[in-house]
Length: 464
Image (cartoon, rainbow, N blue to C red; front, side, top):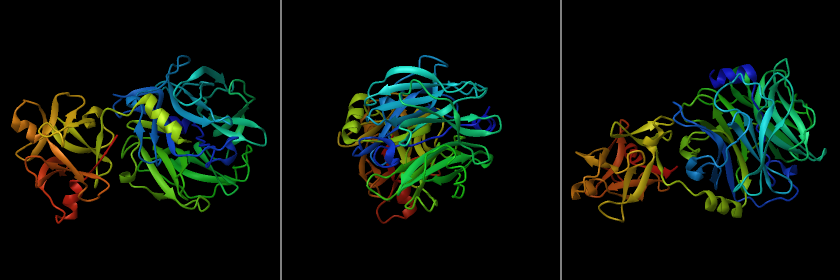
C-alpha cells in the first residue's frame, strides 16, 4: 500500500524536536552550547535499490547542508521484533545523554499492528547500548514514530506516538522516567480530524506543535502555553503548507544564533526530492516561506528525519567515529533538485531521487593529467571517468593515454554564477567549462561576461 494510503488509513506519529538549549527550553537540566546538528533517518530509494531500515546519522553545521556518516550506512540495527525500524527519533535527556526510539517496522507492511517500539541508550551517539523493545498499549492498532517531550510539571518524559483510538487517527502519549517502564496510554492531541506527525518548538513562553493534517496531506501548526494532553486541541492557528505532492513528518529546527526557524517536511512520494523545507523569522505569526533546493541538501535517501542540536565536541567525535563519505555528488545551480550522473555512459543531470542511485556518486581524485586538477571517477564503475570527446561529456574507461588523461581532467574555480559554488575548467581546453545543456553534459566556452544562464549551467555544488 502506498505511504499516503497507509498513513491516511492507519495514522502516523508525532515528531517532537526537543532541544536542551533552544527548541524546547524545559527539555534538559543542563543547557548545552549548540554548535551543529545531528540528523537520524532511515533510507529508501525510488525503486528499492536502497531499503535500509536501521538508524542512519548525518551531521550539519547549519541544519541545511548535511554530511552522511558511515558512508550513509546504518550505525545500529534492531535485532528483535520485525528486525527493522522506521521513523527514528533522537532525544537528549535531562542528563545530556541520548535515547533513541523508533517504529518497529521493516519495509512497508502498513497493516502491521505493532504495540512495541525499539529503544536504545547512547552517551554520545558513537555507541548504542541497552537495546530493548517496550510495549505502549494493547489496542488493535500500531505505535508509529515514537518521540519524546519532557514535561517539567510531571517530572516525566512523554513518549508521543501515532495510533488510532477507535474513532480516528490521533497522537497518544505514555509517560515514563526511564524508557523501560511506561504508564498507560492516553490521547495527547485530537483536534477533531485525522492527524499524524508533528514537531514541537518553544519560544517566548509558548509551545508550538506542527503536525500533518491527513485529509489534504498538509502541515499545520497549533500552540499552547502547556504541554499537557489536550492542551493543543483548540490551538490550531496556521494555514496549511504542502510540498509538491503531499507532505508529512514535520520537523522544526531553529538556526543556531539566529532568529530563524526551518520547517522540514517529508514528501510522502519520492518526487522533487524527499524533503521540502520552509523558513520563518516569526514563529508566533505561523507563516512560512519555501526554501529553494539550492539552499539545502538532505542525506541521500533520507526519510522521516529527526534533528537534534549537538555541541562542537559531539560534532567532532561523530565525524571521527563514523567518518565522512568517500564520494561526492554534484548539484546543479539552476536546477538544484538535479544532480550530475551518468546514464548509459552519457553524462547528464537528472532530478533527484533516481535509481540506479550510484550513477550520481563520484570519487573526486587528483587530476589524471595534473594533480592540481580533479577527475571524476564513477563509484559504480571504478576505472571509468567523465571525459569530453568532441566537447560532449560521457563516462569512459581510462585507456592510459595522454589524450584521455587530459580530456578527463578539470580545474576547480569559483562558481561562475555564484562564488560560493564551484565551476570546472577543462584542462586541455582552458576557455571551456563543464556545463549542462538540455540536461546533457558538455564543455563550452564560458566567461564572466557570458550570459547568466550559461554561467549558471556551468556552476555546481560539491556535496553529498
